[in-house]
Image 1 (tube, rainbow, N blue to C red):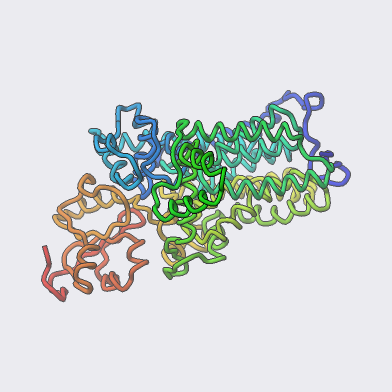
Image 2: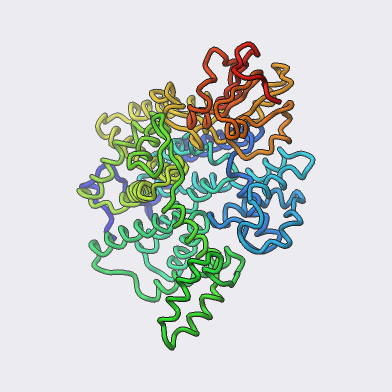
Length: 586
């Protein structure tokens, strides 16, 4: 690929080579790296500081339980909706502390035998200090944040230079949605890191084809696929765009042997991720098995080898995961936006959620950066601008078409690429102002603003909405964008402060409430299901998600009864007995 000419693009500095790379001689030359490291260190402190203050969220037990199966039993059958890599990371800490699968896992053979959430809760609560187990699980995700921050710096530095790299890293590391999911034992932060790595290695393999680059590209793509299944469509579209660009630019494509090396590396790494398991595919669903047998019957002499392959398939659990994911796309869960619960997906959901969950300084630089990136690619013939553009456009497009509107975490991968383009905006601003100090002052102001937002919202990064959107928090989002069960520990503390002896609870989360130090409690959700319209008296706690999703059930809890909030997501009410429509049921 031809290097962009500096006469055509004054914004882009020539990429450094071993011959022309300047050696740092002064403190100023080291300042970008110092700034990046300092901001990342602050981010790590904020993440670690949130561990003890944020209770377990909905999906954490399932990830811990499934990862523990991989580590302790060498199988991966408990829950196939997500690949194993981040789950192994979340289970590693508890495993080193001595946690092991439950005895019921010994007889476990097929999905559904053991509930992954129940298994994860058993692992968390089996130790004397459950919070320590959860902390160990969350620490397993922290390295992925560090990898993602490093790759953001590395890729931006190679493209734009050291100071833009520092700006991009700082924007990424102080983005509240990033910090929120970097502090949880879930899959999203791992996918951000591995998707970044895959795009970086893929571009490198196409830019300078070699056997070594092809090998690392294949392995990196496999790691992304082992982090989340959405890597498959994301990377397929990005790779296609890269191939088209290089073909139009150089009229060549990599040699067949490089494709072969990358393919072998990819397949072997995926197989290793599933413990080199070999098994039968499509055997757990009778309808799919009937369809498979029908297909095999039409293969004639190839029926026997095809049948042997389907019953002895490497990484068969990966194929089962794809089938499970396709079912979820065909039957998407309910979504919530603008105060309404809906079925299926909305084409504008992820655009809205990115606009309200992204800090304003990030948006002020990132949105113009997208326009400038397109200009760099189209007019300045700077091919590397395609990397951040593809890293934003294709994930948002695929997530929108999937109709699974489960929150910003499904497009969390766009943030490092948006940070790269935001750095490009600052370069453009510097060229317009023609004064470096002015551009640096604006950058410092915007970064200070975003860092202040992080410090203000800490540790409640999950609940973050930017300044224009924050007054409408519950109207705009729920579930993993606001209330993921993370405040149940604070509810326990708050009820003790109020000297509550009994409470009715409608809780959106996966924690075992009997292990959360609550006073005597009853399940308000079950009461509503058994006796619709029956109201209770006394103390009532309702998660924001249920209150927003089901106003017909909880609308009778009017503001006049509201006492306060546990954290930011659980409403607390007190209904005097005289206001009850029915006697207080015990």
